[in-house]
Each structure stands twice: as C-alpha cells, then as structure tokens.
Image (cartoon, rainbow, N blue to C red; front, side, top):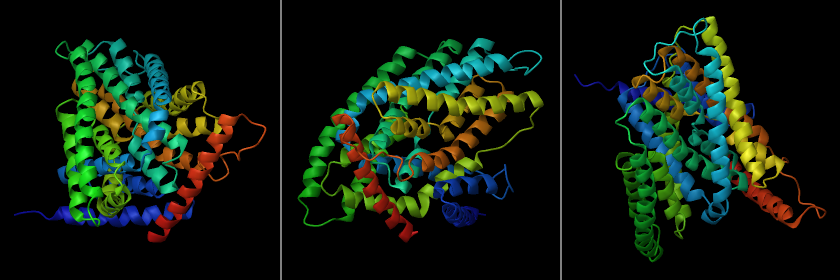
Amino acid sequence: MESYSYLLDLAIILLCTKFLGLLTRRVQMPQVVGALLAGLILGPAGVGILQETSFIKSVAEIGVIVLMFSAGMETDIKELKASGKASFVIALCGVLVPLAGGFGVAWFFNRPGLIESSAEASIFLQNIFIGVILTATSVSITVETLKELGKLKTHSGNAILGAAIIDDILGIIALTIVTSLADSSVSLALVLIKIVGFFVFAGIVGFIFYKIYRKWVDEAKKELHRHTIVAFVFCLLMAYIAEEVFGVADITGAFIAGLIISNVRRATYLESKFDTLSYLLLSPVFFASIGLKVVLPEMSAAIIGFAVALSVVAVLTKVIGCGLGAKICGYQNYQVKRIGVGMISRGEVALIVASKGDSMGLMSPEFLGPVIIVVVLTTIITPVLLKVVFAPGTAPVPEQNVPEHERVTSYYENAAEIRGEYQRKKLEKKS
C-alpha cells in the first residue's frame, strides 16, 4: 500500500519551523534559528517524531539550490567583481587557518590513551582530514540570515558570498588532495582540470543564455510565468552539470545561474517568484533537514573534550582566518567582524565531507559525534552572531576626517543597510 506519510511530515515541518521561527523573532533573533531548532527537536537528537527520508532529502536539496539561485539574482555583480581578489584572499585564509587548527586538535586527541582510532588511514592523514572538515563553509545559512536581516547587498555580504564560493572550490581541492593520498585512483590533476573546465563552461554558456534570455524577457510587454519557468530550468541544469559533470558543488552552479539572470531588467519580478516558492516550502524543509541529520552517539569523556575543543577551534579559526584575510584586503574593523562571523557555519557541508571520509577510512567513527556537535553549534550560533554584528549602528557614520575611500565605503554600506532594513520590515509584515 502506498504511504502518504510524507504529507504529514511536510505539515509538521512547515508548522513547527514557522512557529519556532516566530518565537525566535520575538527574542530578536533571525527566524532561521527557529527553523534549525525545529529540525533538532523533531529529529533523532530530540523527540524523534521525524527522520530524514529520501523525499525530505530531495526537497531539501532543491531548497538550497533555489536559495543560492535567489542569492545570485540579488547579488550586485559589479560589487562582486570589485571584491573578487579580496574574496580569494579571505577564502584562502579561511581554509588554511581552520585546516591548521583542526589538525592541531586532532593531533592532540588522536592517540593511544585518549581516543583510540579505528580508521584504516594513517594517523597523519586522519588528523589532516579533521582539518579539512573544518575548512567547509555552509553559506546557505548565512545567505538566508542576511536576506532576512536585509544585509545581503552590503559590501560585507558580497565579500562573504564571493569568499564562500571560492571556499567551496578550495575545500574540494583540499579534500581531493587528502583522498588522493589515501586512494591512488583519485587524480588531483583531473579534479583541477574539471574545476577550471566548469568555469569556462559557465562563462560561455552563461553568456549565450544571457543574450538570448535578456532579449526575450526585456522585449516582452509584461511579466510572464514562462520567464520564471525558463529561469528555473536554467538554474537546475547548471546545478546538475556542476555536480555531475564537473564535480563542483551544485549550489555553485545555481549561484552562477542567478548571477547571470541578475542583469535582466525584470530580475526583481523573477526574484519575487522564487522567494515565494522558497518561503512556502523549500527553505523550511532544507533548514529542518539539517537538524534531522543529527544523531548523537554515545561519547566518552575524552570524546566530549575533543568535541568542545573542536567546536571552539571551529568558530575561532573561521573568525580569525577570514577576518585576517579581510583586514589584509583593507576592510574596516566592523566589516572584518561581519565577514569572519558570516563564514562560521559548517552546516550540511561538513556532514557530507565527514561521511565521505568515514566511507574511505579517513576518519574513525569515534570522531563522528564531535563533528556533529560542531555542525550543530556553528549552524545555530552563526545567525545569532550575524544578528549582533549587523545590528543597526554597527556601521560607522562617514566622517570628514577619515580617508576618502573609507567615507565612500561607509556611505554605501549605510545606504545598503537602510534599503535592507526597509526590505526586512516588509518581510516581517508578510510573515
């Protein structure tokens, strides 16, 4: 007999994520925190009402794709280009510092007398792999929070977006290097060629699609539903090709698709359609699904100590690493804090990397519990800290006695925040 339990699962997820989202908003926290808590409470780590099914997993994957596609459409491509070099430096520091920090914590705990590892790989590779897990960044959590706060289009928001995309690429390279050392069948050169090939492909296909699509949409006398459907098809195809053909994260393909469409004159109309789709179904399921993944195993005192140390290092290394990169690139102190905090969340990305390492013998099952704790902590703490560092008044008012470039930056940052505050209040009225 065919089961319709997925309908009940969806109803429970939508109701609980919205209810807890409104509660967290009452205490001046982003609603995404409530959605994440709903997944934790409903899932195996809480009361155990729900489990992650293949249906929920698929809907959640579409949810994060649409979320990043919408983020691409909302991004100021000129600002993203201007922050390109800075984003690379931020991402590089945001990979190297957590990699070193994770390796150091694993080196201290992964030894006889503390935690007995049962993984097949050498101790050195296991410790490196723990560092690789900490390099991951789940930009989807930050994007949703910044959209809710109305801060996605600020200088800091664009820097976070650019750095997170590059962070994904650097993370893939780091993961490939480690897996190639453990498995000779993995070719680092082939992976690098595929990554370069994807961006060449995206540039060529994106240019052709943009020319055709812009002419078709801009010449239309009114907004039509077919424009939205074609845009969605393009998003899904780019996400599929990125993941399946080139081995690049599907959200990267979706984000680039959104960037391409952001230059269309009716981009705001298209964006509103996807916001509705995301708000009604996809985003709540995606954020709840992160909590549903969490299954906390039994842990000894040594493993609890490792979990605490790894969590602290996970937070500090991203803030320090990305903040250092932002400081090197000339960002002001308040922007440095925003960028560092925006890169903290590991989310589902770290879980995917950890599961891959577990299947390849690069990580002992004993370390899975601490990694889950890191994911839960960084996922929940990121929206909370973003609320603090993006609070009104944290961007300084331009003064006459500061350098010209700093006055210009502060002016546009404040202007973007004013626009974002207006959009946020509109969203609050709708919810």
